[in-house]
Image (cartoon, rainbow, N blue to C red; front, side, top):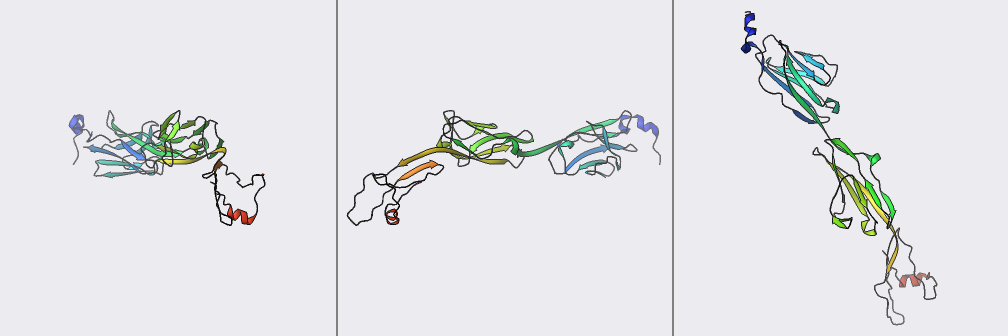
Length: 267
């Protein structure tokens, strides 16, 4: 049975889109699916087109593009699905489903490709050793889509003394410490996130060089003749100091027996 050509002259006889093409958001490396639903298609044909490059991807039942990641499925001559496997950032953009009426009818949908954050190692600080009292700048650069939010914090959760204030987090790619002290010596985490899992972090160890500090808990010890006695001292330094005991005259005590008796506890 042949259709009357005059039927094509009425609006009701033309194909119509049953629904909008939904915008799709997909993480890089995953598969994307764009759906186009057309009622009353009759003898017309459906095509998928990449809008920004005006590249024809498919015409009716045939895939035209040479991109091996793109395929087409359809259902009951009504639903037309464009499949993009393992999406890349270059796939981001507008896609058009069109029907070859005169004038042509079409609908567009946007494919958003999101990318989880990644630290750019070449632009990010590594472990460092600095002298106490100098100024220190830690840099952290991240990439991803959307643009990642970057922050710094101490790995141990202790507040940071920055600009005279104690804070838990410093927003931004740069952590600047003025007149660094031994209290700043810690592992710092640069954390980057953009709402696309997973977030990522890099650990930067900051070591601060400072001269030895010595403390003696008990400066006077008493003992009977023949009694064992322990003399205790505590030192703090970075790098670790070399510690030893001397007599009042300045002679270094090297006797094994004396070293066993005069225990040097240093940290």
